[in-house]
Amino acid sequence: MISMLLKGLVIGVFVSAPVGPIGILCLQRTLNRGRAHGIATALGATLSDLLYAVIAVFSMSFIIEFITSHQFILQIIGSIIVFFFGLYTYISNPIRKLSKMNNDKKNYIQDFFTSFGLTITNPLVIFLFIALFAKFSYITDDTTFLQSICGIFFIMCGALFWWTLLVNIVNMFRNRFNMRGLYVINRGTGIILMILAIVSLAYSLFF
Image (cartoon, rainbow, N blue to C red):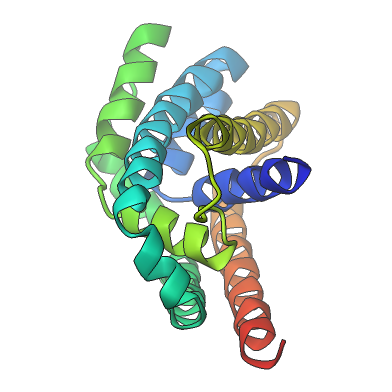
């Protein structure tokens, strides 16, 4: 269970870490209106990721045998997917999409649902979850229903940890934070994802 906890936290952070449009929206609301608005936005994104995690976990029951039989190949594919996800994060320009997001005078509930609505429109997250599950052997033949529920909870905790950390850091530097710094965050996140993918690929190939 400790291993599942740690893996779940890592997966939750891994899925939430890229600073895409929702990350920018969360940071901007924190900078403009304070921590509470940033947290409300983060919770909307977390709920969306949670729903996709549920779909991924319970759809895995249909392909557990396939994953078990082809675990090595799937781990290689998972590493490649994560690498290109990191590359996309590195080269993307999330600032460009800010003009499409209306941030004027919204309350916490509106912050929550706008964030949820924007995040839920990206079903490709399911494939990222499945790739990570295969990469970390998160779902196996021995995984019980209760363990699956706990696994989803751990993923949610990882996502919430990342978002809370990010919002609080930005809130601490509200008076000094430069929006150009988001480019640095975005590229740094992309580099980290690519490095982790390369290390993971090397581990799968040689160990």
